[in-house]
Length: 68
Image (cartoon, rainbow, N blue to C red):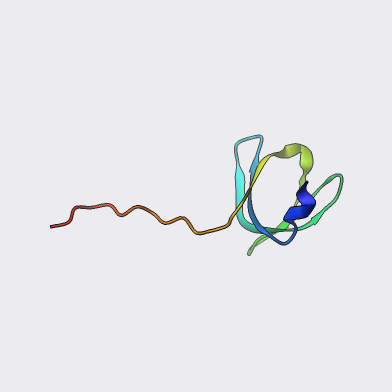
């Protein structure tokens, strides 16, 4: 399942509630995932992953304020 995400920018959510974002999955095997971003390389066990979100497009924030 994770092999199709190799080379894509993803956000990984963990079972403890934390997450890592804006990184790329480099390698996948039966035990875990090699994930790297601009600052670090992480080796993540598959058993600690809750969900993976593929970052496809930058989210546009709604404009706040009043027009005159």
